[in-house]
Length: 295
Image (cartoon, rainbow, N blue to C red; front, side, top):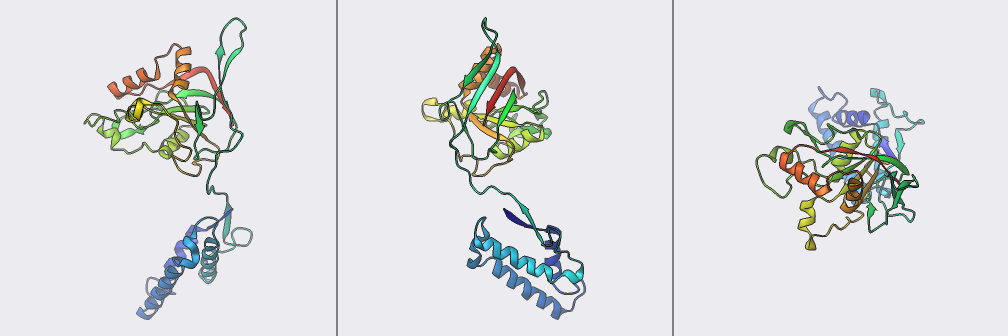
């Protein structure tokens, strides 16, 4: 658990630290306020507080110190008893993530063959897919949609989510951006938006209602690798803590996505990507009848 000081009160603390009358105090009061502020800064940045990192004794010392300073401002109307009689609001925060032992993922597709049973393809951890550390620890069973590069740049009139509904679905997204390996004026407005990071794309997908995100390498990335190998990403490549605790974030090999596209008589992933890069227009689509299950 962590502690969150009420931010409005925290801001008022620094305002009031200048003196009893912040806007009109005497020069002596202002000087005293500056000394208090300097002492506060010196203490909060001291080695004793260990950088105030999560899980350290230092962050608790810092929280107690600030809470004490705020209590001295009660006479100015600052409230320090908002959460169970204290200034501390408890919340959960991820400090680090490890790949757990019970990961499972499978694709379930439309019936094929005479038996009429849905197709089920169990994926192999470390060969076909890997969770990323920014993933929440969740169990899911979701329909699938391909959302291009997962980018929305209104200034460039480019939105991979404009023609596909990803609400309540797992959004499959290419890494990077259209024409990533090419420096040209036509794609510059998209690239200038700088919206290719893992966390940005996950947040954008979630804003459009996605319940999970599946990343796969784009062709430019594969070509940059020795042997043109579509290898899986490392577990911590996007960071060490989750973006959203309720959203799974996974990396899949391109072949996994191509198998579903082939079953639906859709163009291969490479051809779809080529079309996006050529036209600079999204080519998002639902993968009708296909679902992804996992935990």
